[in-house]
Image (cartoon, rainbow, N blue to C red; front, side, top):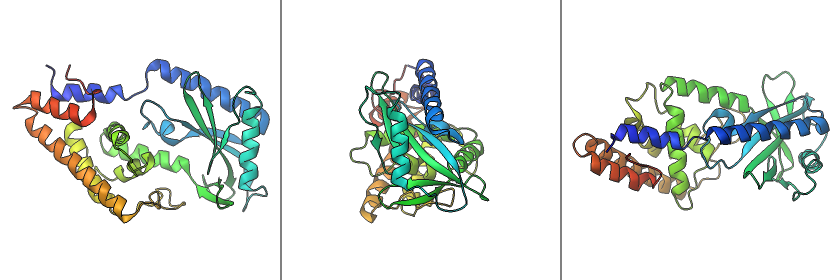
Length: 287
C-alpha cells in the first residue's frame, strides 16, 4: 500500500492530458486557426479558456479560440449575429462533410467526432485605446460585451505562484469532483475564480490544500463572484440563493470528508485511502 500523499499525487496526474492527447490537441487547434486565418484574415488569434490557463482536465470538453477580427473605437459595425455567422461559414468551408457548426451565445462550436476534440471559436474586436480589452458577441441580446481573457490568464498564473504552484492542480481536482455531482449549478470558470484567493501562502500539501480549498469555497460561494477582469457580468449572475446554499452544503461535506482523511492518513492509511476513493471515485488508486 502506497502512502496517501503518493496516491493523491498520482490521482492529480491522472487528470492531466496524456502526451498523445496534448499532441493531437496541438495539431488540431493549429489546423483550425490556420483555416480561419485564410478565410477571415483576422488581426490575430490565440487560445483562451481553461486549456490556455492549464486548468483543463480530461476528458477535455472543448478548447476556446479567440479570433480578433480587427480594431474598433466603439461598437463594431457588424452585429454579433453577423460576426458569429461569418465565423461559422469560415469553419464550414474546409470541412464540408461535417454538420453545420453550432451558433452559441458567444462563440461557434465545431466538433471533430473522430478525435472527440471540440472547439468554441469566439469572434472579437479589440477596443482601441484600451489595452487587452475586447468586444465579444452576446447573441441573445444582440450586444457586444467587454472581455479580457488574457487578464484571466495573468490572474490565474499569479495566484498559482502565490500558492506555491499548487492552486492549479487543486482546481483540477475540484473540477473533477464537480463533474461527479448531479445537476451541479457550478460552472468550471466559476469554481476557478472562487479559488483564486484561497491561499495567501502555499498549503503544506495537496490534502491539506484540498481541505482548505473546500472550506474556502463553502464561504466564498455565498457571495457574488465578479468577472476577475472587471469588465463583464458576475461569473455567477444566474445562481439563485437556493443553489448557493446547496453548493455550500456540498463544499462543507467535502471539507469534512477531507479533514477525516487527513486525520486518518498516518494512523489508519487504509481508511484514508478508502475514504478518498469514495470521494473521488475509482480514478483514485492506493497503488
